[in-house]
Length: 479
Ligand SMILES: NC(=O)c1ccc[n+]([C@@H]2O[C@H](COP(=O)([O-])OP(=O)(O)OC[C@H]3O[C@@H](n4cnc5c(N)ncnc54)[C@H](OP(=O)(O)O)[C@@H]3O)[C@@H](O)[C@H]2O)c1
Figure 1 (spheres, protein in one colour):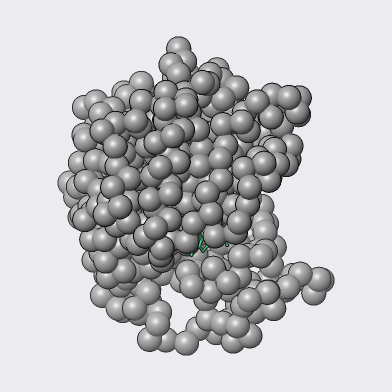
Figure 2 (spheres, rainbow, N blue to C red):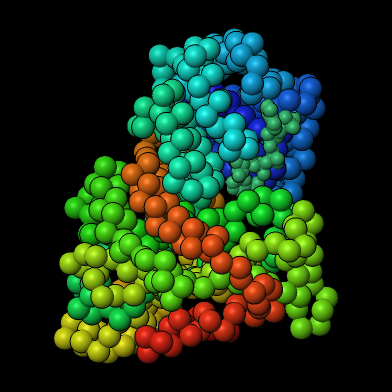
């Protein structure tokens, strides 16, 4: 059942790419489905001096890229949009924002609720949060702060950022976005485990040989070279998305789908990540950077716009994680992410061992959870759609709903409006994952890689294959 929500959204960075490509289309979907109807308004704010009318035109133009609804519906939706020119460092501008939000709250009866959305460069997150607090923007309704990624670039900067926003907002009002947590398959993993007792019983070091998480992209960095030069794939994909996918798959079985319980289990899992020595980093993590393709037609990474000619930023990584816990000790978790790979895929491959036979599952069975569905499939057993497989130990509990799955941002915005933090990341989780990633980054910073080392359109450097061969294993997804 759809319950209409009431709130004033203040979108910092309201003229930017994220807002236009992700947030406004998601808000429009929520408008069409009735979650947002009469009692909401959106204030877009950024430095450029736009009028309300011009802002609304930009919103409608971006909606047209995704929807073929009539212009009149889009215009009706856009009447809820207002623009306020604002520089994040100017205290006066926050007073103007506060007054506009109060006026719109009266006009739309928005229940004094505020969603402050940081669709702005990370270096401004702390300043904006502090000003919201110090300039008295908070109301007697709810006041929720939404933070985009990246949340820091190492443990120190993440701590500093967290310290700044925590001075202004209590942890329970902070919604740190990891859009993979908005994806249906990632959200449904705890349900899959609860609905399939045999599968849940097999998820431990007695029956699992190894677990593999692959997030591969076919494209290169495109126009994001400037950002990528400050990040690299380890920070951009592994610290957040891959860790959160592992969290959902490998945490202890939650007694309930309550946010506090799920977060506690994830925190415990990440706290049990086995620390590596610098020498272990050399053994267990590999990095790569794409060269041109076989025909020499595509840019090598070092030829991309805003990328240094001698850049040592990695566009590919593969590694082995281990956990010191009763459940997972001895099981390798292989992770892999890269750009310019042969295809786009996001998947979890769970490789069972021979002993799983005693649970009535065929020895060496591989269960694949497809985060980005391909050809309509969501779960594969030994490469075959689970509905056609002879084995039935895993079933999707709500297949029909998967077909109507919401876009990740749409689903996350509903959670924010409902005050449900289960699909957002906690500071304690980030602290553990940054600590782990820092060990790798520090080792890599002390060495000079031989880049570029893989051809565009391939599976990355050979060392990624050798990483598993050494353990007598191999990647399940192999072009
Ligand atoms: N784009 C994506 O797909 C994506 C995906 C995941 C996360 N993110 C994160 O989302 C955030 C926004 O990314 P984006 O790609 O949308 O960036 P963007 O297109 O560059 O937009 C940045 C926005 O910030 C505004 N801005 C810049 N300086 C300002 C200042 N001093 N005061 C007030 N406003 C200012 C800009 O407008 P003016 O120039 O007019 O001020 C613009 O609206 C970043 O943290 C990014 O890491 C983006």
